[in-house]
Length: 100
Image (cartoon, rainbow, N blue to C red):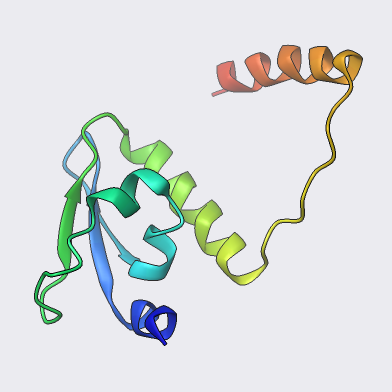
């Protein structure tokens, strides 16, 4: 019951640059960090503002997009990666982080 109630509420996630993103509460709660910052006792009429001063707008937008997608279509569990495969992904992950 609380889950469907969370679908009707929104929170404002505020990025480092001050940009505000309106996000359904159920999606916002997928982040353990955001979940700990939500005031459950706040008035239902007003959306809560949650500052995320260490998160840039471009990154926050991607995280929200990711969370919304996986709220509808949950991820499946991934098996443990072998050390050889793990080394491969570490290299390519660092390259991906450098991509514009």
